[in-house]
Amino acid sequence: MLEINGLNVAYGDTQVIWDLNLKVEQGEIVTMLGPNGAGKTTILRTICGLVQPRSGSITFQGQDLLKVPAYNRAKHGIVMVPEGRRLFPKMTVEENLEIAAWKPDQKAETMEWIYETMPKLAERRKQLAGTLSGGEQQMCAIGRGIMAQPSLLMLDEPSLGLAPIIVEQVFEILLKLKSRGITIFFVEQFVEQSLKISSRGYLCEGGQIVLHEDSVSMLNNDYVRQVYLGIA
Image (tube, rainbow, N blue to C red; front, side, top):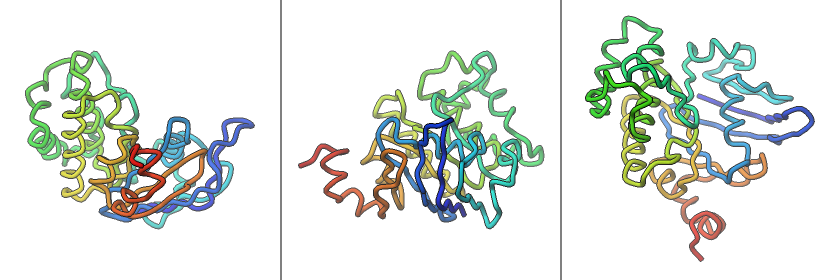
């Protein structure tokens, strides 16, 4: 579904992504791990068109994505749930969801599925988004992404700032999205939990992919266990 080859990205004179290669197959959940400042968010922003690469290619469903303007990439099926949720705090939950619904014929059905999958949102549908708990805001942000009918849903650290029990709920939602046929590519720092719901993982350090394995192999990798899981 998504293929990146030889990607180089810079902010001014500072290069942050180096010759990056990455693939996401249709129907997968793929996670990208790595420390803060590794370039993970930049990769997502480049896929969305918010950052222009110096060189390299990005192909999505066989199409050259770099020829598609950023404002049209959602219509091609690429949607990102950004770090920090970025909700409209003075709009209700329902209004935050509705604003992303650009396919009117599927709006009611999609919203009903969101409320069934995340019943807390149904309870809070008339509540201002800015008054929700952190976990509820994250669910609302994911719901807004679903309203845009993505083929590929990308999430930037969906567990950020959430209690462990809420993190589990968020990851359960991602599995439900996969069962709905949505491909998921997400950035995380919760190594063990994210790999357990993923088919494959990438490890990004210093703007480069330093490890790419299936999730089971990655969980058993000595380097990952020592550096990221704290297991000798």
